[in-house]
Length: 183
Image 1 (cartoon, rainbow, N blue to C red):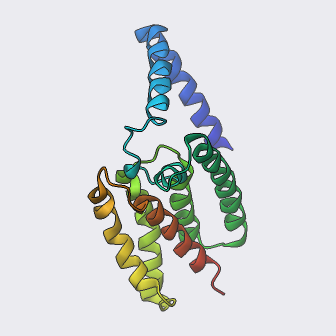
Image 2: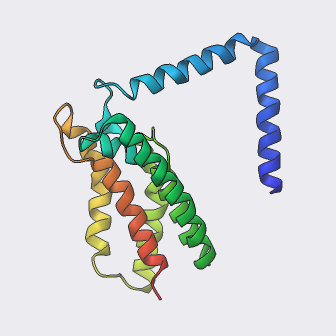
């Protein structure tokens, strides 16, 4: 809780310093830019194939924007609750961190393919545990596929295709959870 308090106080101090240095107009511009970007994320010209979130995956398979955002909200709540349960049940700090990294990526609706680097700790934890304690069935091919997946995200371009980024992030989380639930 102390870390959260320090982070909150730091954020408030930085906001105050920004206002003092640049005035209130910078905040109006900031919130206008957020609204503008939100509008772009609900247009047909947005590059949804570059998103790795539930929202991006849902739009890629044809869901309307409202339904995709509702799915994202539900998934984010589910991921937060599941991560909390995982942290209570699994005591290994490396698996906890790995699950948090993979879940955080899926919980952000505007996470792009280049943010797949957040699942790297998850993949490395699974690989280390596989090497040290033995591989679970199917882990090695999945790890290899997940290592290559980010390079294929952009290959679909304007053509409809599978939500590769979303599937990669979801599979990385599934590998970690499976590892954590191993007796």
